[in-house]
Length: 160
Ligand SMILES: [Zn+2]
Image (cartoon, rainbow, N blue to C red; front, side):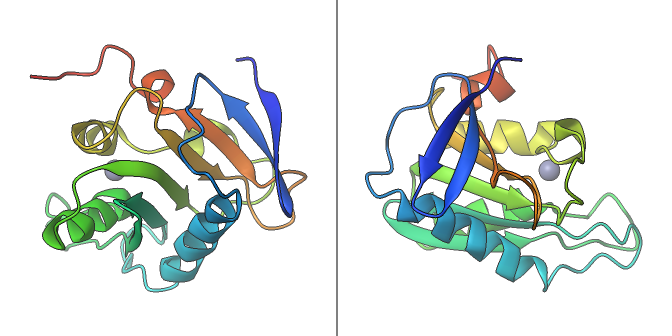
C-alpha cells in the first residue's frame, strides 16, 4: 500500500489512492476530523464499547453522526451511515469528503479503523471514486490519519 504525505495547515496525512482536491480549503479536512471526534462522544455503544464518530461534507455543509447500537444487534447503525442519512434528510445529495474516528490508539492498524463494507456501499451511493475518506490515526499519532480514495476502499463498487 503506497501512501504519500499530504499536508494541511496543522496536520500531515497519508494519501492513498487517487483523490480529487475537492476540498479547496485544507482547513475543511481538519474541521471534518474535529467534528467526527466531537460527535464520537455521543456514541451509544453499551454492547461493544466501540465508539465511532463520523462527519461528512455534503453540498458544502458538515453533517455528523455516531454509532447507535441496539439490543437486537442487527438494528445497530454505524456512525458513517448516521452522518450520511442526516445529510440526505436535510436535502444534501453529494459527498465531498467523509471523516471517521474510532478514537484509536496511535499505531492501530488501518483495518481496525476503516468503514465496514455496508457503510462503504452507502458512501458510494452519494460519492465518486475520487471522494476522499479521512480515517483518524488517533490523538497524538505522528500524522492525522489516512486520506483514502473511495475507489481504493471499494473497487468495482456496485452502481446502477
Ligand atoms: Zn459501517
